[in-house]
Every structure is written in C-alpha cells, then in structure tokens.
Length: 542
Image 1 (cartoon, one colour):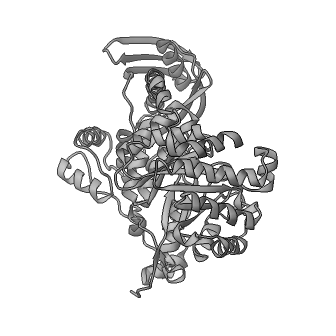
Image 2 (cartoon, helix red, strand yellow):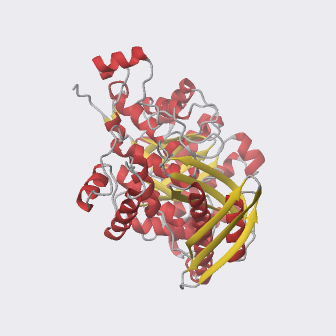
Image 3 (cartoon, helix red, strand yellow):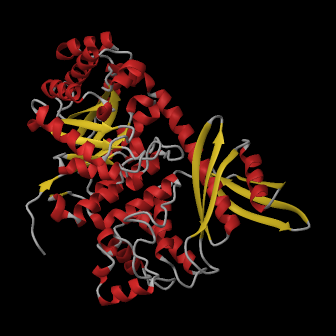
C-alpha cells in the first residue's frame, strides 16, 4: 500500500449537543452517557457534551459526562455571557481535558436582527468573553456564528482578537448550510491568510446540511487547511442536520491519496456507533445511507455480482470490516457459552461491565429458547438495551389480551413497583395495544399521550424479534422508550413501560437537582481579580 505524507485533522463530535437539539432526538442521561462512552472508544478528539446554561439538568448531564470521559476532550457550549461561561466551567470542573466553547454571531443579518449590536460591540464582547473564560480553562474555542455570510475581513479581525485574548481554536461555521464547496474552500483559505495569529491555533469548521452539502463543504475546508471538522453521528442535527461524521471520516480515509490527512477515528467502530445513536434517538438510518446504511454492501445486479466475484474492488471502494458492519451470520444459539458470547461481543467492539455482561447473556439465553438462529441485530439490540437502561420504577409482571374482529379488545396488565407492590388493571381499547396502554395509564395514575409509535422486525422469519420505539408526553414533557420481544404486543408494552421509567427517573433527577440549586448558585458568583475586567465588559455589552 502506498504511503502518503499526512497531517492530522481533529474530529469534534457534537451529537450530544447540536445533534440532540433536533426534534425527536432528545436523550436521557443514561443514553447520553452510553453515547459518550462509545464516542470515546471511537476515538473522537472532542465530545461536545451539551449547553450547560440551558437548564440544571443539562448542566448535570455535562458534568456527568465530563467526570466519566478520560481520553477525550469534553466541551461545553456557551454564549458570550458571564452566566453561560460560569455554568460551563462548573459543568466541566471534573473533566480531564475541558474545553469551553463560546459562540457569538458575526453576520450583518444576525448582528442587526438578533443581537441588536454593532460590529464594534460584537468584537469587544467576543474578546472579553474569551478573556474571561481563559481565567478558568486553557482550551477555549470561539465560534463566529453564521461566519460564511459575514464580512470575511470582519471574521478575520474577530478571530485575531479572540486569539490574542486566549482562544486556542477558532471555528468558522456555515450555520445555515448556504455555502457551495468551492466558495467555502476560498473562505477558509481567506481566513487562514488574513487572520493574525492563526498559525498558533486550530482552525475549525462546522457545516450544516440545508442544501445537502455539509460533508462536501467540510471536505473542501480540509483541502483549504482546516485543522478540525465538527460533525455528528448519522448527520443528525437541527433542520437538515450536520455534517455526517462517518461520511467525513471515510471520505478522508478512502481518499487519503487526495486529501493527505488522517484522523484518529477507529473506523471499524463506525457502524455500531451509528446503530447506538439510531437506537437512542429512534431515528432510523435509511438503507441507502452512505457508509452505515444496510444496502451499502448489498448487490442485486447480476453484472455487479459477477464483478464482485472476480474482484471486490470492481464495485466496492471499502470493505464491511473497515466500518465494522456485520458481513456474516453469527453462529450463536442457546447452547453457546458465556466465553464464546463474550468473545463475539468483544470482536464486534462492545465493551460491557461484568454485571451488564451477565444481564445481556441471561437475556440472550432466554431468547435462544424462542429462536433457532440469533442474528447480529438481536445481539445488538440486547446489548444496547442494557447499556442505556434506567432504574425500573415499574416492571411488567404479566399481561393477557383478548382481541378479535367481532368484539372489543381487552387487556389485563399486572405491573410490579420497585418496592415489590403488584398492581393489576383491566381496560378496553381500539385494539390490543391501545387497551394495554390504557390499562397501564390507569395503574400509574397518569393520562399519558402517545406521540409516536414505530414497530419493526430485527430479522426475517416468523420468530423474528420485534423492536418497538415510542414517544410519550405528559405535562408538556416528552420521553422515549424501546421494547424487544418476539411478540409485537409484548414489545409494545415493554416500550411503553420503558418510557414511563425514563419519565420517573428524570423527575427524580430534577428533584435532586433542585436540592443542589443553592450550591450551584454560590459557585456561579463572579470571581475577584483577573476576571473582573472582562466580566464587567461582557455585562455592559450584553
């Protein structure tokens, strides 16, 4: 294989921040922690864990991720405001490698209509915010929001100012996905040439996909010398989403001869990471999705099949192994032992604590009594279910459904509470699932609203496992739940109960956070000394 002189491009993942802001993509704390662990294993350079000033719950989620991640930088996003920066530094206080990420818009449109500030005020506030943050953290990223639609000279001037104030990374976002690749490459080249001090810091890009060009623009920026690309797993994000991490990474890897750069991403973990994010958000990956879609290595055309048999390179520019996609049916069943099962999980990139491993193995053996052949998707769903589970306030004890074409569906549900108390209810409904959900609502005493329901088979055959994904709402809040079973009614019931358990868990967490509010307020006091001058300036400009 030919060797090329390469430079390193950092991968900044914002799945847990920008990705989670997309409608329907919200995650609970257990899910965020599972995704963060997977991103660290994947080898991303920076995990943007959230926006700490958004809420007490968001601050605590970022704090939990920052305390857990050791090998990767953890970033928190904040506006150019004292209170935001304070929330960020508190959330990142236990991070091994913290990064404070500050943003402020620089385009005439944003400055006039959103910020109602002059360019001079924006420049001063940006510099003051970075100077203040630098009192607490050595790694500061500054983003000029909507920079591509800004005056390019003004962006260069702001970047020069924040670099002088202490920024270590400057980020040039195409916030609304407006740029064309050639234009964006010229823009990044211009910024590199005109920004004083740019050689001392990393130049980053953050591209959105409104015109379907986020990956193309990010790759163009790398060609122009960008040192960092910001992206999300599966390209999730606001509106049309962000640049897709897996597409960016494999574009750079497959065409290393063209770009002459490399990343630290372990590409063989891309598929499982994609599946995890799809699992926790409930957003399916289209079968024709580049890199991680189910059809990426499927060939139906006879001409293609003939070429592949002669030489796979005729129609495949990468292999399933390179992205970690399963390419053979596993040979595991109810007679498989724990050792073989553990080895298989390890080979697929799964890392589980002993207690979680034993729980997954027990579920695997139980599934083996129901199915002759256990597929990769079955194993994957079992592992992910354990990896993101929350404490069970309610557990399914038993269920019975009577349904038919000539009479009303009836369901009897018995649930077990955490303290062992059993509660049973009978309800009727428009069908077996509707009657089951109504019975559960009566037991828990809440009139929950079903916002979303999705049912799919994980494999082929009459014994295939059904995976149900639902979203419920109560008192203007929403929660996701997932359930697995070879019976579609049971899968649906389990998903509904899982969503209720997430609701109860987050309500308990909110109460815990409220109790800690006083302590957090004390920590947010503006410190004396070096930080006072920039803090005062920010206060004036804000």
